[in-house]
Image 1 (cartoon, helix red, strand yellow):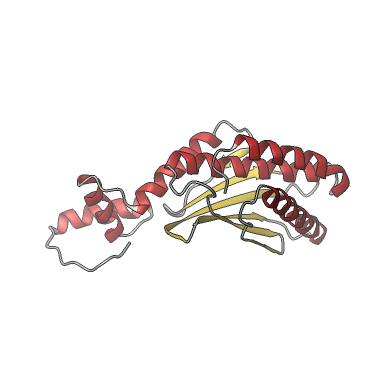
Image 2 (cartoon, rainbow, N blue to C red):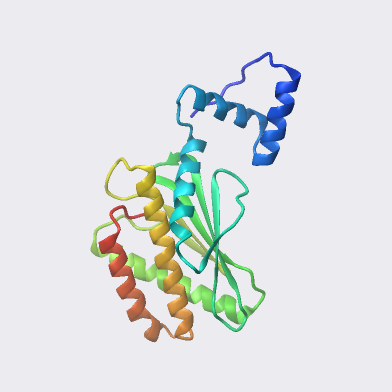
Length: 221
């Protein structure tokens, strides 16, 4: 959606209060005024839609003991932490970013990161990410779904969210789909570590869980 520059004559005291509110919300003066006007004329901005999706995701995740919702740096991002039972006691950080406008069918991305300096742990994580990528690729190919756009960095995994199937989807459907994906991913990585990183031991449970996810999730990403 395009934006243009407009000149408005406003009272200094009004602008001062807007600036205070914008600072508290972590946004800019222009963005806040844009949102206020959009709400007044009942127009849904991309920021309003992103906020609605994330608020629903927060509601869905609050019922899961292992997840902690973190303070948000912007309307376009949601961060969730999950503890991993492992000797280094690492924390998994899931960062979900939504785009103001879709890039093709891609509406956002998931970034999975760990805070660790342990090289053995980083290698174990990289092995898991590679296994997960192959697992997803295998089942998505069977279902004739588009291949996932993802990449693996050192101790990090980044995956695009591109809804498959229906051309249109609601905020609720998108929130449900992203929440379901994070839950299945979190369960898979914990199964992998519970098996000591042994792919042969972890893969059957991971595959079973992923099959259940595919069958139970109406909107696949």
